[in-house]
Length: 457
View (cartoon, rainbow, N blue to C red):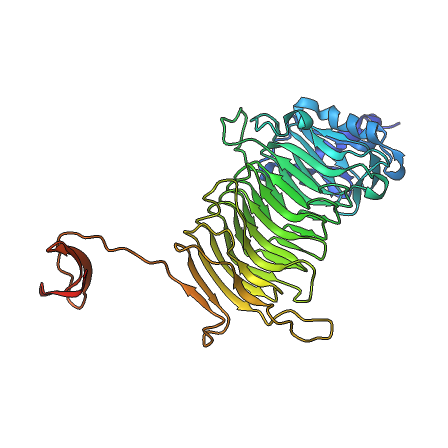
């Protein structure tokens, strides 16, 4: 006779119960670990619901249209919030709608794939209300959601009229280890409005993108137009037909660290088209086109590396390029400190520089090579265009060669004033004064002696 404990019905331990107890492994990941990761990153998972898409009929066999099953799983957590698990497989789908507080989890990179169904011509994942909100600069949109550990395959060969990997209008979200590729349009699109009062609950507006890769798309790799003050870490874009990283619109204050844009098809690796964008230790690798394009005020490219192909190319190959912004005084107040190597046309194009910037660049610019291996005259220049008078420049390509170096320090004014206090011993104080209706440049010594160095004629 079975004892009392063995008589308990094992069937009552459902998959969801086991998952919530952390006693089962879904998609190769312990759910307890998933929950811990969510809690550690400050992401709300609502009432703790954990949904496996297979429980709603998704097959992941690469042939069946799983749209209805996938959407049912996403909707199952609804407004409560929770985790939706995407086990290994290729899930063919049309547009799927993401909502606030929903956290979509794959089994990692190429293991869990969402592939756009032939003829869908849509986004694979799209935030609720995207088409209604895009372009409005509204402070609405979804928030407190995340996507991680999966691939978005745009299947562009069978979606000739359009297709995106992910389109978001929202804020306060996280993308981690997401691959977006093979899309007819952009791999990832994000947008939100300007600074505004945030509805509760909110942990601020920033989006956080980590280890995101976007490549082989016919549009931009990442087309990021908000939310502002967002963060990119260890992200890569390559071989896109548009820009690798386009940071524009209301994405002001976005910070990027250790990001890499490269590829023969990308015309621009980094497009800094929002104010106050900062890039630290980022890498622009180009083959024709522009490494870093700056068109707004107060942008920064610090400690980075820009590498050109240095061959004869139909398009100009430029390391850093200043382009006109949306306002007449843009771009200005920017900071560039970088190493630039092998850009066939020029390391820096000052064409639209509006001043008050600082550009410090160390070069290796031997000049572009023709097909026969000879250097092409007039290529590999240190700079083209002319920096604004108030921009401070230090471009060096061998300190002993003044023809290859450009060092410009802005002029400064000493305004006429009363005789200043004496300097301390061992110092001299310069000042300007008016005497007899003429301006004089003077030196004041510690003992009080004033020496007139120059006088207005």
